[in-house]
Image (cartoon, rainbow, N blue to C red; front, side, top):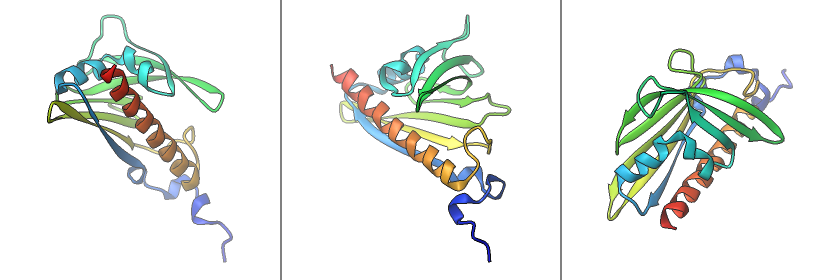
Length: 165
């Protein structure tokens, strides 16, 4: 009988698609305005508790295929990511993949739906492939997903507050 618990199974036995979430918030602005704010990746640091410096590559902007770099921090660690935009529909949706469209590791997506005088902003996160840099057990990946879900909730609340001010 194995003493290994479900929480500690090696990630080779896991499915990346099991690690995802979606969070929503209403903000007091039109979808086009919210899209403009979110697709300006340099502004992400205003709302995200983890991003400290994000910028498009020189000459790039919020369009499919464009790349940007982001500096992040968590638990005393710092790292830089390279991301590529895979969807840029003004006023509707903005999506990027950390690591790029061809071999990305995580997909971040935003959608914008009008509701009343404002917008329902939906932020989603999906693990695209397993990589030991993110964790090696189900427990590690569950904890990462939960942390990122909390981070997304903070980001959405901060975005809504920033727009309200």
